[in-house]
Amino acid sequence: MNHLRDIEQEVERTLQLADSLDKKKADPYFYTRLKARMDHAVAPPSWWGALFGKPQVKLASLGLIVVVNAITIYNTFHPSMGSEDSRSEQIETLISDYQLNIETYTY
Amino acid sequence: MEDNTLIAAIQSGNEAAFRQLVEHHQDRVVNTCYGYVHDAEDAEDLAQEVFIEVHRSVHQFRGDAKLSTWIYRIAVTKSLDHLRAKKRKKRFSSLFRTSIDDGAATALSDGAATPDQQLEDEQRKQILLHAIQQLPDQQQTAFTLSKYEDLSYKEIAEVMDTSVASVESLLFRAKKNLQKQLHDYYHQYYKKNMG
Image (cartoon, rainbow over all chains, first blue to last red; front, side, top):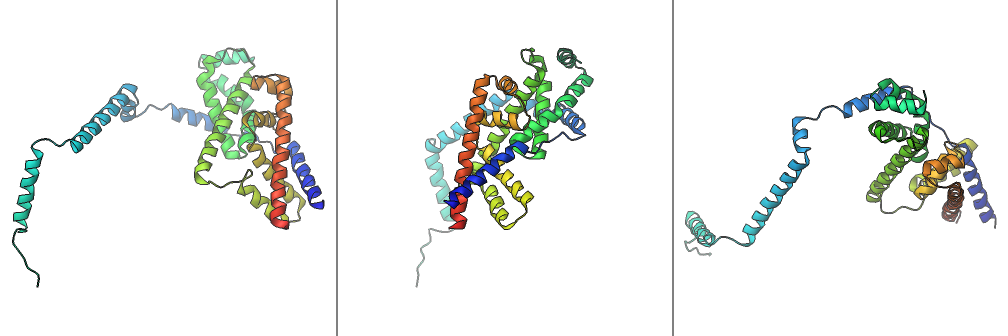
């Protein structure tokens, strides 16, 4: 019972503090800081920012990325007709370069 | 300068008029933002954002509401957005939080070791501030404008674009919610520390 009464008292004490919450005032240099921030925010963007800030350029860049990715994926899963031959040639070259076709024996 | 004259001057690009508006409202805006974020630096930063927004959208001000009401609305929106962003970040950084977070828990456990009444009140205040931040947005706004800015129910209703009866109801529910949160918190605390 004491325990419950303690809790109630603690809740009441805490809630009473809502009537004496700290108030804050603006810093004396508030306007100076605000003005500096506003001036900085309206500074002209660099040519890079100005170019890529345009929605048309953003869309075109996105489209280009999608197309390049689509081509890469397509080529990965659908290799061209001649690629099988060229791969065999590469393997043969590797075999002869590293002399992998010479029989070796382990003792 | 009258509100309408001041707004017209700002709309025509008069910097002195904008400065006058800022200097007239800056304390209220900083205090309102502080009521939400409970951090002086964040409050000042938010207040700057509020005035930047005021400057940007001053052409849209039609004079339907009082200038101070309009500025309060922007301050409330910015503060709530800030708190939402902070909560999102917190969710990522910590998955295990109770309704009142670890900071408050530390405050109270430290408080048990210090007999100093002032310090205990400061720690209770921290617990209360954490609890206020857990209130639903509408309740938090009504509570903050009432306790920090001492606005009347009518003024709060104007800022929140609602009726006086709704404000009364919001404040009543806010107090009930705070009571419940604090009760749960202290109950857990006593259970943990007193066996």
